Amino acid sequence: MQSSGSPRERFAALVTLPDERIDLAEAALLIAAEAYPGLDVPRYIGMLDDLAAADGAATTGDDATRVRGLLQFLAVRRGFRGNQEDYYDRRNSFLNEVLERRTGIPITLTLVYLEVARRLGLPLVGVGFPGHFLAKHAAVPELIVDPFFGQMLSRRDCEQRLRSVLGEDATLDPSHLRPSTPREILVRMLRNLKQIYLRARELESALGCSERILLVEPELASELRDRGLLYEQLECFAAARADLERFLAMAPDDPTAAVIRQRLIDLGRSGATLH
Image 1 (cartoon, one colour):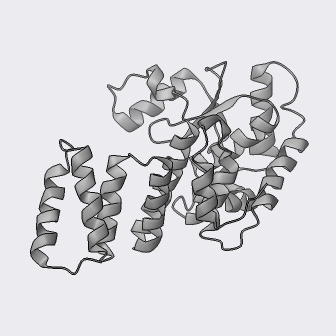
Image 2 (image 1 turned 30 degrees about the horizontal axis):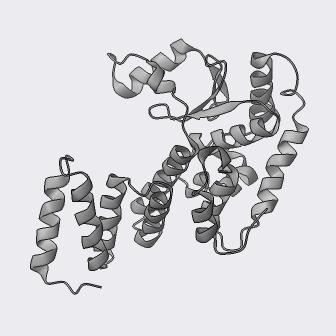
């Protein structure tokens, strides 16, 4: 049920819950609600409910049959597919748009699969595979799904993809197929969106993504650094200094630490009004 308050406030409350109680679909729609004022979150939750109710193929049979049935239903019958023509279209990052348009990027399409599967009692989990988000069966890890291309993947497929990203010497190990937590999924979604805003020089929107990432993971040093740099560009110098100093306290040996120390020195020399 949708609670009162702004989307940011509702998102903040949601991500304080334990991982197992975080409703990923609601959290993703609250991310979208900042870009779509007045977004009807329950309507899109209902669309996921309707998809699950219509998917008879994933309700019976063994695990492999059910996973393949889900893939057939979403990728073929309902036409959910990766947006290869315009991968960086920001609409691909918003769950409401993905449900309406039936196209998106790997992580948002995977989210549709996870949420429909959850409603069907099918235990799928997200996998932050290098370069391309995937899904797999929680209890039968060889059942791996690529929602972007609408494919089942073998271990050999995963090895080939890994080498295409990390080089020919890369070796697939269990860490590459580790299940992502709900918090990790939300952070990855927000980082994707932040990069889109940065490309468009929409700094305030990028800052909003950074702020929400820190609601999910308050001690994420790299994000404190990034938020501080955004504050600096937006001429919020006191906030920039606070974030950058905290970053250095938390990660003094980070490869970017020397650059950040210089930025703080430059901020002091500039005599910029702190506000």
